[in-house]
Amino acid sequence: MIRAMRPLLVEGWSLVADFLRFGGRRLGATVLLMILGGFLEGVGLALLIPVFSLLAPDSGGRWQRLIVEQLAALGLDTRMEQLAAMLAAFCLLVVVRAVVLARRDRMMSDLSLGFVDHRRLMVVRDLARARWSALARLRHARIAHILSSEIGRLSIACSILMHMMAATIMLVTQAILLLVLSPLVTGLMVVLALLGLLLLIPLSRRAAITGKSTARFAFRIVGEAAQFMGGLKLAVAHDMADPFVRQIEAESAALRAEQDAQQRFQSHVAIASTSIASLLGAGVIFAAVGFGVSTVTLLAALVVLVRMSGPVRMLQLNVQQLFGVLPAFTALRTLHDDLGGAAPLLTGSAAQEAPAGAIRFESVAFRYPGAPQPVFTALDLAIAPGEMVGLSGPSGTGKTSFVDLLTGLLEPDAGRITIGGVPLGPATLAHWRRRLAYVAQDSYLINDSIRRNLTWGSETRGDADLWRALERAGAAALVTAMPAGLDTPVDERGARLSGGERQRIALARAILRDPALLILDEATNAIDVATEQAVIASIRQALPRATILVIAHRDETLAACDRVIGLSDGQREV
Image (cartoon, rainbow, N blue to C red; front, side, top):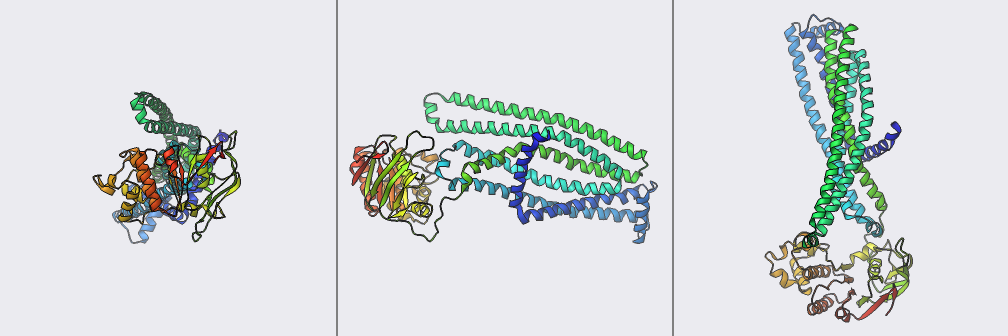
């Protein structure tokens, strides 16, 4: 049974170790407050002994005699004076402890939220720094699931960890007090704890299994929903929305059944735990009376035991919950590993200048992993600065791969790419990317205003620059006619705009970058030919020194280029 728990324990320790590294000194300060809170709890419980002694003056025992002597030495002779002093001290201690616990809880919350933010940003940074070859294999639904559902479950795990630490420290202080009061009762409590541990092992395994199933079903639901939204227009047009609904309904039912089974199992364990605890409690009282434990000591010990039952129950629940949400942490770690640890590909210094000059492919070879045929075997070509070059060829001949190599998204298997004689690599890639603009066929727009879309990557530009770029892209009249002008929202992925309008907004954004290289990948295919010709001429006038690479199938588009390079089976044709 313990061997079966080993993977869970290893994963749990990984989470604890990661949390400890993040917490640092703040976690140390929080633990000190936990210890102080536990100490004050113990002192408060200890004060109940003199209170019980004063309430039951004839109960006898060494505790009563010692307490009466100490209070008398302080000048408190009457029973009411002694009781008032003890109750005042007890109330003061309760208030101080409440203040300490409030501060502790705030620090626990800050640590938990901070750790979740740290892991969320870690995912985003991993995505931003990862190689394109790793990113291309990722499902979008997986990322959406991790950044929403799994991050939420990680937040629960952090909160559980903090409460487990607080409950453990509280139990230790209470156990020490109980040991001082009655070693016999303490021994019986140890028996209770061992029985609880035996109950906890199968429950934790079941919680871990349920946690994995929950994550799996939730991911499937997110994936189905993402596919549904991605193909919503087609699904509605073909009256095919029902299959998506039925699939999500089936996944939701499976998830609910798994959670119901876990809840029933927890209920059965709770019944068993309560039954055993009540039997042991009765056994403690019976044994204590049989061994002659004084009434005051027995009452105080029972109060401590009652106080301990809360943290014990909390620990039991927290352990199950922790194992249930551990798969969320596993999902984040697995993503980090899949992205290659997000080792930075770019190493150039901030002061380094971007490479400039002619673009050269020198005997470049490239093959996708697992592909039967290479895309390029020994590609040689050159593009002069300021030249407008068209790239043509049937689908599958390497046009997109050429662009991905030029932008550094892919790396050649052999040969090299140079910019002005400088090899394109980790030391130069970041600076090169800042000097290029890429406009794709499916223009990417964020769900914000036109202004925000235009200034994405060009935040320092003023309104005059924005309108000038819109004029160059043939979109000024379009934006002027909109109700809020530059502040008009474009909706999700630019849904408020037509395909041609989205392309013109994307072209204006590219102009604002003032690029050394402008890549137009079917970027004007949704614009009519006459407007396209005017826009291309305007762009060349706005960017006279820029090199422009045009990927297109339309002859009219390629006719505007200085020359056209044809690709056939990954080889230069023209």
